[in-house]
Length: 81
Length: 396
Image 1 (cartoon, rainbow over the protein chains, first blue to last red):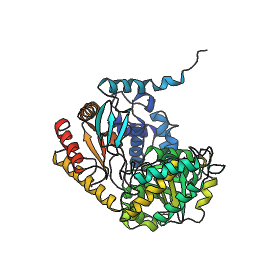
Image 2 (cartoon, rainbow over the protein chains, first blue to last red):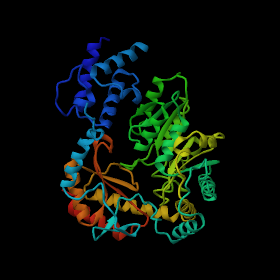
Image 3 (spheres, rainbow over the protein chains, first blue to last red):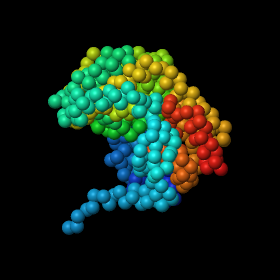
Image 4 (cartoon, one colour):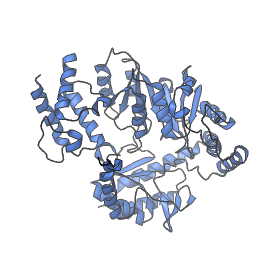
């Protein structure tokens, strides 16, 4: 799967959590720009895990800032399978 | 170069707190000026019915516990001034551990200074960086913190959903390292129980060890009050049990327990056990006495469940939506949003009833809750008063 397609799908999954209404892109800093609380981010990550059928441990989540970084991590997991 | 103010990052919290307080009382800082009983206190020169204390057995004023605490103060002093692995183990600590092991019908028990430290110690002692912990999404913060302290890989599964855990266990099948699944007996915010049989069934399919945090269920559920495993008839399938003395036992402290032959080795591997002062003599003595009372007086659990059912059905009869559909000593009334939750909490408080105000991110699924916890010491009159006040000020 191409990274841009992964980014698009992650943006779609993020929509219900994005109460700010800000436009989402690969550069969007999820915790800093979208005003999602800590539990909300973990809930969103579960949606990403299930959509792509990959594992994203909580320990990894704190190191991921942008949608693009998340897409890269998802890609790396998909390539492992 | 200017100094970065470390507290700047908390300005958002400060502003939110100010918004809450501007709407009435400080719901997050209620001060009990005097305790009248396990279910009544003087707050701001007013007598309040307490319906949010987790004092499930109402044992905090039992004269036998008070006498035991006073005796321990006189015989052992005010504090231990040391950790359990240094000078802080008194005969009372080992007596409590032995009594608790007997109560739980388990071989080994380790007492901690608080319930929070029990979770930090047990989780970080059991799992390490090479292992994986699977934790329920609605787990208490102390579980999250203990998991983080362990350095283990952390995988969250959907609340009370064994099929979701099954899927997540399968994703990492074959990886090296141990696997620990963490459940709670009664979940603190909503009051629902883990469907233990569903999770135990997965042990036949996937290799893992199972831990149940019975913080809100120890002394409360099960035919002998031993918690979730006891209620489900599956105690042998639970590898590790954690609990607290600050709820049904009416003191402060926590414990971990197991039949594992190496369990006591954890005493030398758990930093939150090793590097803190042990529980004070008075607290340990009151816990020990309370434990004996809980074992000898099962009618307290019966009374707690009667009171819980009375409040649960009473609130639902008003048309209020509760977090759980099952009777539990934790009864959480759902509210529409944060603003109305704060307003309704203030109205309840003004009418003489204290409950817990629970708002995100401290709640699952961004729920806004008026969280009640029931005590065996509540009279039916008190329960009926609580229901009447909810009817007067909470029902739209």
